[in-house]
Amino acid sequence: MSPENSNLPSVVTEPAAEPSRLATMFRSLRHRDFAFFWTGNFLSNIGTWMQNLALGWLVLEITDSPFLLGLNGFLGSLPLLFFSLPGGAIADRLNRRKLMLGTQTAMMVLALILAILTSVRFIAIGEILVISFCTGLASALNAPAYQAVVLDLVPREDLTNAVALNSAQFNMSRAIGPTLAGLALGSLGAAGCFYLNSVSFLALIIALLAITVPRHLAEEGPSVWAAMVDGLRFVGKNRTIILLLSVPAFLSLLGLPFVILMPVFARDLLHVGASGLGYLMAGAGLGAVTSALTLAAQSGIRQRGKYIVGSAALFALALILLARTQSFRWAFLLLVVLGATMVGTLTLTNSTLQLTSPRELRGRIMSMYNLAVLGLAPLGSLQAGAVAEALGVRFALTLGGTVCLVYFLILFVFLPRLPRVAVLPTPELGIRD
Image (cartoon, rainbow, N blue to C red):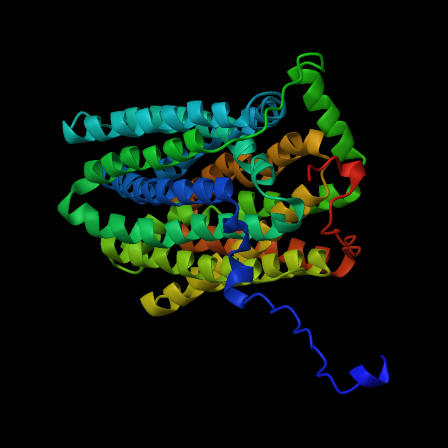
């Protein structure tokens, strides 16, 4: 600087302001299409959770059978066992938005049929089981596209946040839906809950019509069967993915069926009615929302494998304690823990799988995740219902929690460190900018 200018005041450049914690937590919602998708799903899922609780209560009133509660859950999830993998191949080949429009419309119509049959009192366990199966079939085709479309709507660096926010809206609806259903059952009856669920599908259908999703066509590629085989071959050679998938698989078979047994647990063990059941399920939703928002606020998580397995082990321990409690208050608190650890485990597993999956295989790999989480659910529901019918609800919950806890503790000790997942796009993964 020349001497004559040495006395001029220097210009100090202020550092850029750091984004607030709240802005970081909800950063994925700045993307218009994801914000529409998120909002539509949130409103639709409130209706779905209302129907789930009301339907479980209706089955229990009609049959007074824990086994038939489990059978209804079995048939509702059975299509996911057989169609998750083909659904993933289809999701990689077709326009995911159009596929979801078709499946959401089908589920809306099925909810309306259930509502009408219940209103005219022409409903029995047979009709309920058929509608549950058909709804599960539509859900099996919808789920892989639903999982894979998230990265079509946000850049890769926002994926973990988007998955966490998706989990947050799902679990906020888990808190709100059952609470509303518990209140609505007394005034509107089960049919009212089913009508509200049917209307709620319009929110997601309108959102899907408003967003743009890249097409994924493969006319010159392999057949659906060959595409499935390619996906299985890729996963078979990837030990990390196999270990990741084993965690939700154990939860689905032995841990998550606790939801199916909650109507019996609330009515026969805690001696509360439909509103009490709604509050209990809201506790699980509260824990789930807290966990999801906490994850959404994180910019990055190291040692994901240890977090995933540690959270799963805590879930199993809370399930064992829930089976022994006789207090509504303690049951509520334990359900908060169950909701939080369930979401922590599944959200991190989901985002880690998506971040490590090549784009052209993402739908198929996420269909295997759906197979682990949802496709094995019918077997979990059936075993939980059968064990509860024969040996009691407390024994069924204790058995599932104990087996899960042993497996997760073994996995926690011997699990090799999962590789850190980069947060920047990498050409070899074929992720869009």
